[in-house]
Length: 179
Image (cartoon, rainbow, N blue to C red; front, top):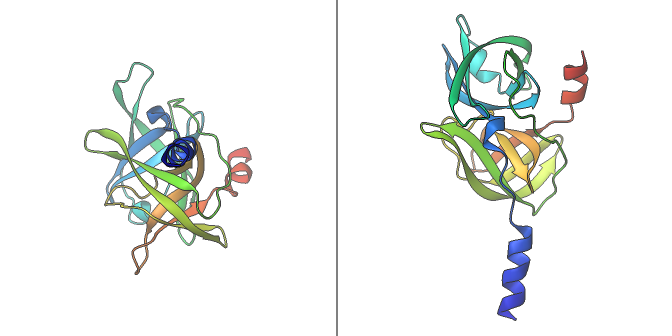
């Protein structure tokens, strides 16, 4: 019986997202994470740009695993829904976007001091375009991709008063990227 349980846990484990998709975003309001959703387009949270009055720099890993820093410009921002798209002169590795469901194992990726890293948890619920999960996230994880089986289901936005992490789903992206 123990062998069957172990096999099931291995089959359900989340696959690693390519670390070339995760970026660090530096702007006068602070430092946060984001990820490539198309060549030259990064998605992140808007709350970091609410006091934006200076350069935005993106740090990412190139194909040789070297950290690169490039300038970015805002191509779309919605402060009410806390989302922003940035245009950069870097292709990056765009992610695959999909849907998640309650009970899924997830990884939350962020660019920390030493590069991309992740923390794991489980989706508690999905309601009105927001995924709620139990994840151990810290400062700098906002804007990072929430991943199920190697596929991005949402963008991490923060924690609520009971300690649940919340992430916006990405159903809005296709419309904004196509414009």
